[in-house]
Length: 181
Image 1 (tube, rainbow, N blue to C red):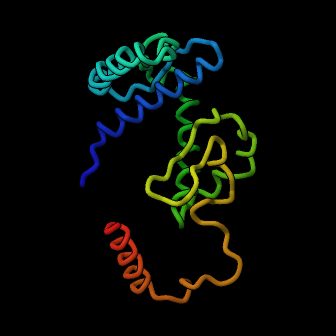
Image 2: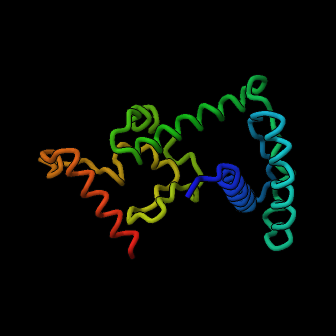
């Protein structure tokens, strides 16, 4: 199974617009969405899908009318606000990496100065770990030092003394048994 990046981006954008519209409704306000323009071809490809999504959904979901128009594309090189959004996105992606990758190099993106963002995200913002028994990571909790997937271990890990090849075989067997279910 290969990843279709266009479909993935489109689904993420649609869900982002849905959530932004719901948030605007709870605040009884309207919203103008700005995006960093990647290139003209991508903008031209995105716009019809975004228009279609907003207008087709607005008849059933009143909150979609809270979005003034489909996202406007602005070059971050000329907009400090979009540059700031890029910085925020970079920090969030590093914090997500820390939460999801066992040997992540991005512990710096949690705790400390990032405690200041606590509560700054909408409550419905979350990282949903598909097909995992781990709880979703909600709003600014992504910046917590404590990790849901890799909690701090006190003492000795059983796997610490096992050869990497044996661990690889165990993981493969576990994944194979999960697929059978």
